[in-house]
Image (cartoon, rainbow, N blue to C red; front, side, top):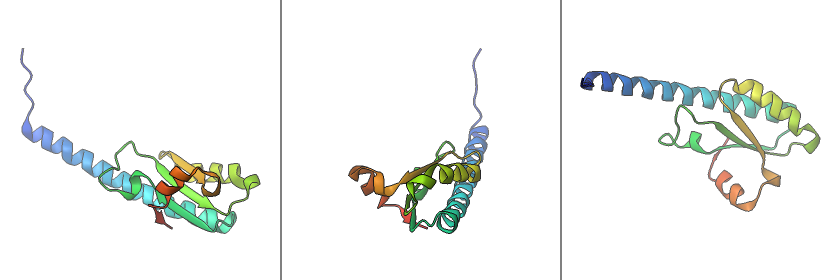
Length: 116
């Protein structure tokens, strides 16, 4: 028994995967903007930066997460802020990094991101 794969089916599957990836990326940007607004208004963040795969269309996949770096949040409020950001993120895993406390190599990566 031989399996045949239809080129048309492959094209349809590829288009569908691309659509899902684009929708997820748009959703991740909405979440990032909403989280940044919350972090600035409720937690008095002085700066919020998106970094990682979200800023590179070619690297973002259907499994990508959302990476945010934040400045100016009090350490005592960090875990509450993380909980709120995770609530906003829903099915998109979100990492919130205190930029002032991260190591220099990670900070270099963060600085290549996009400020919100």
